[in-house]
Length: 245
Image (cartoon, rainbow, N blue to C red):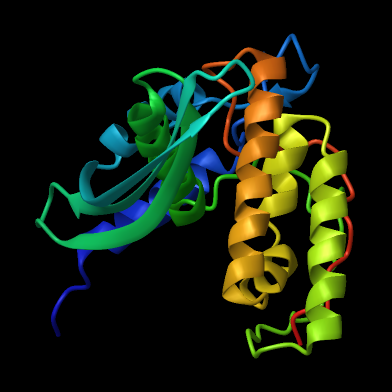
């Protein structure tokens, strides 16, 4: 009988060990008052554990897209998306498992690509190793409620439905007060489905509004270099379920 690839035993061992403590949000955005975990927190927590279990992670960037906007002062603002693969390799037998993910970031200088790469690594690691965001050692201390599956349809809408979808997206976008709220709102599957369901010209107009809103919030926040792409603080965004159906 052939032995199983050791990379999966190593991944399981890392997952088991890091699950005992998780990676808490020890950093704070002083301007907007929310806590977050940065890429350094992930590196510092993960590096000794993956080394202990003879696992290494090798990144590979598959693609990079960049677009340029202007912030409120008229300065360039760069929005970068990278598609990345991370090979998780066992140093014992050379077996590997590849994780593919995306990273997104904006910056007014030369750090947008670096931020996007860091975001891709952080979320690939958090998903591959099921890293809890806080220590959760008591199985009875939390209850997880599973939401119903969301409809994932991008079928064309009627003109009236498209107008309603666009109006609600635009109104919600205008009300976003922080970058954290912006990221959390636009990361929703229902919001993405609603945006994708719009006619091409309406969708482009909404994307322009989205970019302008980020530029406004970015200016207000003075481009916090360590701010993460997403934040887990309490926030209840508008419900867009069913708009794209």
